[in-house]
Image 1 (cartoon, rainbow, N blue to C red):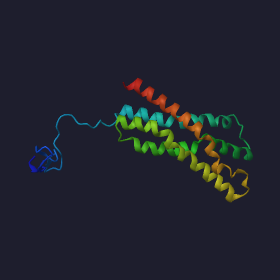
Image 2: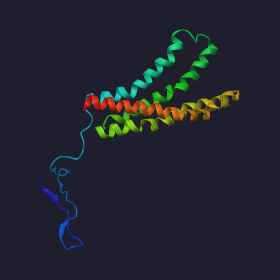
Image 3: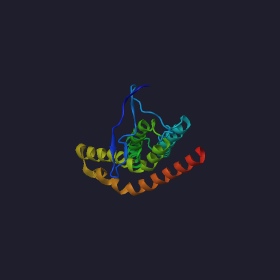
Image 4: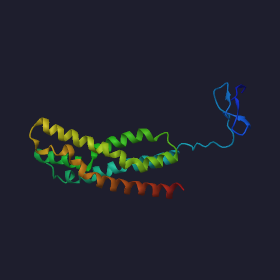
Length: 183
């Protein structure tokens, strides 16, 4: 590598001369590596699998819990199946699915610190994903017919404290388990 540019030397307030920029640019566009890099390596395959499992297990658990009555034949008539879809909305299945897909896409090129920050911010980031299906359903009920279920367009707000509590319990357990397994 051949040096093609160097930062100019400037005087500081005390009259000492120093480089304005310590980095030198080389022909290949790279910067010289001095000592150890400050950047943490991206997640290993095992760490990424752990975070993916932690991301997707709530959806699978909620589907299993909410589908129990369906499995035992509780929702066998057309009228009762309408109640089942409301029940899935209460549990947040559409929001969990969208949230898990979105977060999975963003987790692949993260380092450990970024992944842990992502875990702690996940309950806050989940709220819009939980709210949108409720609002679409409530507004759809208003457009399609009687307004008896229009409250669902804003009724989700009463569940936000419970979502945050459950979300931070899950985040805390995830981080504790991660520290136990990968320490």
